[in-house]
Length: 188
Image 1: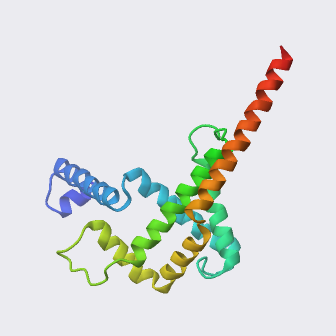
Image 2: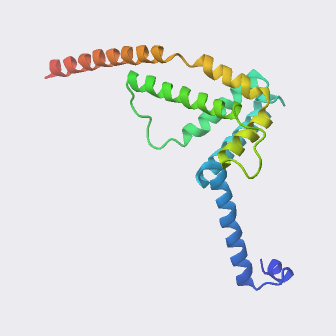
Image 3: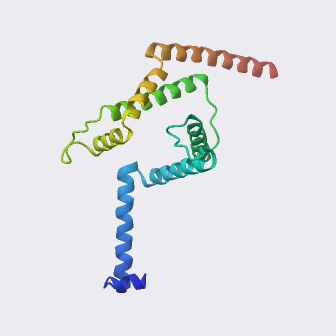
């Protein structure tokens, strides 16, 4: 660091200050791009998981093009993220599973909708940062984003089907609760 300070005509304290300032700017860019610095590092970890899965299992195949390499990459991603789980796996009711599945499908579809509907003609002075990110994703992904949007829509049941599943799960949970209650009463 002393050498760098001397080469750049700064004192050691000025060099420390410059490096500290640079690190804050880098963290600001991480936060802008990923929502938080922690999200940046988590996504970096996901990227490393993909790279390693391709090296070890993908046999050089692109995980976005080859079904086996894709399954290997998503399996590793899931395990890496699951290892970050805060606390034990919560006990869930069937209704909670149905509701979670609904929101996951909805968020997935919305993200693909935002990407596929992005305005590629947005000038630098127009739009939000998110709109520019979605446009960049659309440019980069090309027809893959359209295919993903179609799959997200096909994989998501209609609202009436979600309601039916939720009601069935509610009924199943009630039956299970009644079984547990009657078992507890018998133990007394």
